[in-house]
Figure 1 (cartoon, rainbow over the protein chains, first blue to last red):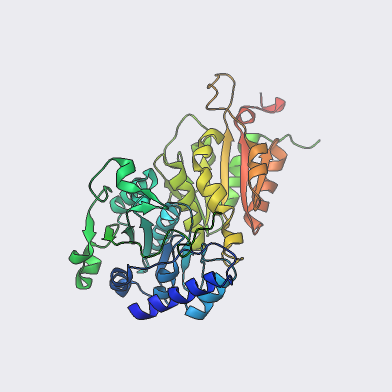
Figure 2: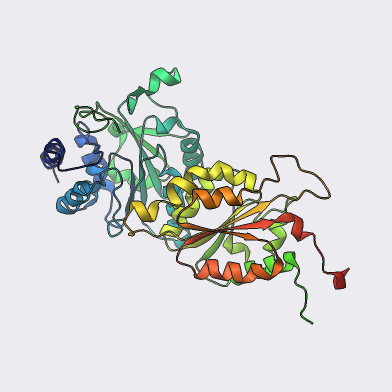
Length: 215
Length: 186
């Protein structure tokens, strides 16, 4: 899966949406292809990925086939992509997956296995209480989980930094690593319970393609 | 004449029954450390290795419960008061209850939740520690069984059904009944 493949997939979904083939909300990705391609180099097929309402790129990069994903979207499930075979789980509630991913990581550790959980959240979610609880627990118990903050500055259209009265991008507990610091050769030495962060500009609106439909 | 069952003993018996299943884990407060509720005592026959004491973080606990179930465990998630379960409603209503529907049946998380209605005698604990929201939970939840354990005879069968069921269950225990002692034991 390349950057061009990801973009082409979302363009096709956007066209289907505008052609009224999808009678449900769609949440399209654009602008974060490169950081995600980098992050998913570290994600193994047997790992879990926990995503958000905006999950198409995550799903494709986890190995879910574009055909299967497109069918789910056509059936109105862009907002709730779940695939058991690929250990892919999502929630459309802000921060909803955080403690679920934490429980999976606890289970993996109890079993003594080498699998890993990856939990993607937006910048607004990174300021919630549940984010602080989960990252603290994961860090202190060295659970096999990585949290990834995807910062586009907005939650729907509410500006995160303005509404929290902050200038810094985020303030989670524990270490935050920007992608520039991320080197796969040292993955196992620091990735346990840590937080990854990247920033991007949202290429599509929160929902749909820019022509507003209220729902 | 049939023996009159003791509520507290039946709960302990039910926990012991659950613990025999290798998939079962007990998670929450008072699983490893005693407090003013009867929870710790009810787990005395459960091996320590099956008990995970969590910090007070009710929503995190419910999410972790769901996560453990995705990996094949059957977590018994313990809430010392129904009042405290209210803090876990996002994970309970928006996630545990909806996952099967959202995933078109691909994920069917199955957990057991214990929540206690605080006792009002001999000490009144105030309005935040003795609420019984059984009816509200039944109204809110579409895919989770909600069972109120109103007498000792129901306890072991109810927990056995929860273990065997394909759905998740919430069992509401009534702490005032823990104190009740059959006449012949007085």
